[in-house]
Amino acid sequence: MKALSFYNIFDTAFRTVVLLFSLMLFAFIMAAGARSALAASLKSSAILTSDVLTVGDIFDNTGRNANYVLGPAPQPGKDMVLNTSTLLRIAMALDLQWQPSNSTDQIVVRRAATLIPASVVTAALTNTLRDKVVDANFTLDTGAMNLEMVLPHDMPATVDVTNASYNNRTGRFEATVSAPSAQNPIKQTTVAGTVRAMTSIPVLKSALRNGDIIGSTDIDMIDVYVSDIQPDILLKQDDVIGMTPRRMAVAGKMLRATEIQAPQLVSRGENVTIVFKEGPLRLTASGKAMQNGAKGDIIRVVNTHSNRPIDGIVNGSREVIVQQ
Figure 1 (cartoon, rainbow, N blue to C red):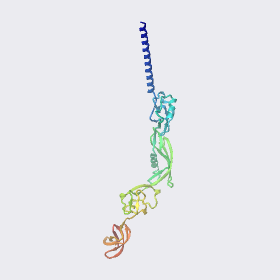
Figure 2: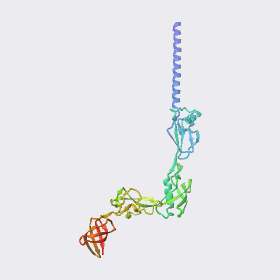
Figure 3: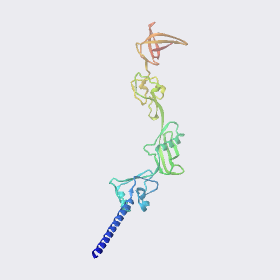
Figure 4: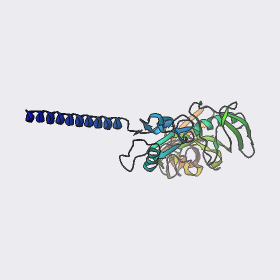
């Protein structure tokens, strides 16, 4: 009887110990799970719309620390990189359950912004100066000045130009650019530079050589600065069409008067048609050219019927006109 009683007591105690151990193990597992569930995680990136950087901007699962201010946000449109060591210091200071996955963990914090590109600013300046500049076609040279403007993210991408002045003699201009408007100048800058007049001139679409006759389909019109045009540069299509390069003419390059010539329509020694004109009267005769000639050149030919030399004007291929 005593042995049975001892066995019952031992069994009860053993069961109690096992139960307590199981409860402790369960509690440990639950605590570990809760701790894991509450662990902070690093965000992949952060885009800020406010003036300050908070813990919640860079970490998830930060609890009451989410609104803790770490410092000022970057300027609108600018970035700030927080590397592994900086993130660890933040986590340790605030007792966040976070560890880096490797030594390259980082986050890029960007301040949201409205970007006004330089092209928008240039277009606004050009429109304002158009009534002041004599030349209708022009561009603005502002040197190395960065015309891009950055505003807070909730501002419109607009600009106003005021106080514009222009000197026709020097080509210099100056103006005030305000964004998003002159009434609300969140950003304002003074822009100065030079107005550069432009004009369109003919250039070849592809390289041509002597003997190739330049036609209208061989020409492109390009805009160039007037100040870059030398006195002998050809300015009109009519100056080029029907001509031929003296040697090789390069595509896209301004053409000089000395680089092209009228094509040779008559060669020395070849048979030509002599056209005699006197008022409405037009007669033709056979002849032989004594000289080479391009359109408009005066050359000497010999009438093969009379064997008499005569001067005439080259009018076309193997054709010479004699005016009586």
